[in-house]
Structures are given as C-alpha cells and as structure tokens.
Length: 183
Image (cartoon, rainbow, N blue to C red):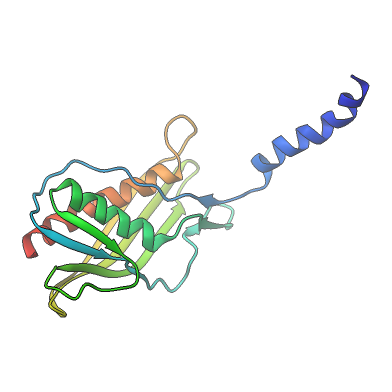
C-alpha cells in the first residue's frame, strides 16, 4: 500500500497532463447525410490531391495552430465514396492506378480546409474542393464547391470533429447531385 502512495502523483500526472497540454489536434470523421440523389452504374473515386497552401486547419483564440490528426485527402475522398454508394452507385476507391476502361473516374483537388475559433465557444469550419469527372481519359465535368458552417463547440454539445463532419456533409449535399447528374 505504501508503494502505491509513491506512484499516485505519477499516475495523476499521466492522466491530467493530456488534458492540459493545449493539444489542438482534430480527428476528421464523417457520417452519411440524407441521400437526396440517385446514382446508377460503376464509378471510381480516385483519391483527391491535397493542394492546400497551408497544412494546418486554423487557429484557436490564443493563436495556437489547430492541426488535423487525419489525412484530409482521404477524409474528403472517402466521404464522396460513401455518399455515392449510398446513392446507389457501385463505387470503387483508388489511390494509385486509374482504370483503363470507360468507367467514370471522380477525383479532384482540396483547395482549402479551415477551422478557426470565432468566439469563446464558437468555431467556423470550411472546405473548398474542385471535383473533376473523367471518362475515357477526358474531363467531362469540373466544378468548384465550398461549404462553411459555424457552430458552438462545448463538451456534451459538440466538438471540433463534429463541426468538421457537418461541413463535409453540407459539401457532399452539393457535390453528389452534381456528380450524379454528370455521370
């Protein structure tokens, strides 16, 4: 029992230190939104290119950088993949090889992703992407999309990951109907 008292301060330090270290890392997650479009046929989602000039997401109210703990290109690309499957497409995901047949390929560029603290308990998240649809090696459609959401971030109400998931859901609500229409 006496040896446990010696280690108690160490255990407390190990458990409390992560809560106080000012870590501003955000895990990017996604959950499907309502499916409002229908899609038929095969499609390939090719991992988007991350073309952001700055890799951090933004800053908090103290000026500390907010960083992503996730691969932003995977986050957007897999979100699109999931939405197209939910809409009825037979989707495949690729990161390195393009299909050689006439299957439509959807890819694009992530132009910006931001998350900034705008008030004591509010944050604004935004994402801008360019989506490109290719068929037989030729671009058949290219369009730029932007989504921005500002909301309260409080324990028990929502966190930064929830806010960014809502930004991506809103963005997909614009992208998916356009992609389905142009396949």
